[in-house]
Amino acid sequence: MADKQQRPRVLIVEDEMLVFMLVEDYLDQLGYDVVGPASSLEKALTIADEAEMDLAVLDVNLDGKQTFPVADRLVARGVPFIFATGYGAGGVPPRFSSTPVLQKPFKCEDLGAALREISAIRSA
Image (tube, rainbow, N blue to C red):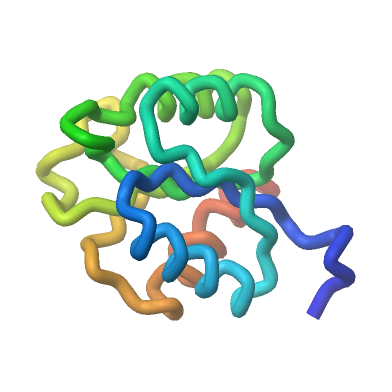
């Protein structure tokens, strides 16, 4: 495992604290550090604009508000991300059709595979 200071940083945008804690645990197991949590759209937008991060995991729905404005800001910054949702890929606008979507609930290995996929895109 890489030195903690060199671990990639992943923003978690999630409004369910138990889900956040599970994803945080998965990320630690996979060798990532966590940025966040961002449990509201407003906080997610601020963190997306200001924090240092390498990747992000976005819940599509935060207390009834969609996180697509956060995704737009991450695109502008060149930060790759994945969506995590109970709605499946059908709940994602066409402009994000190439973005991986993890169907909730997901396993640690599914998250790892999705993060490796978007990491490869970033380093290409």
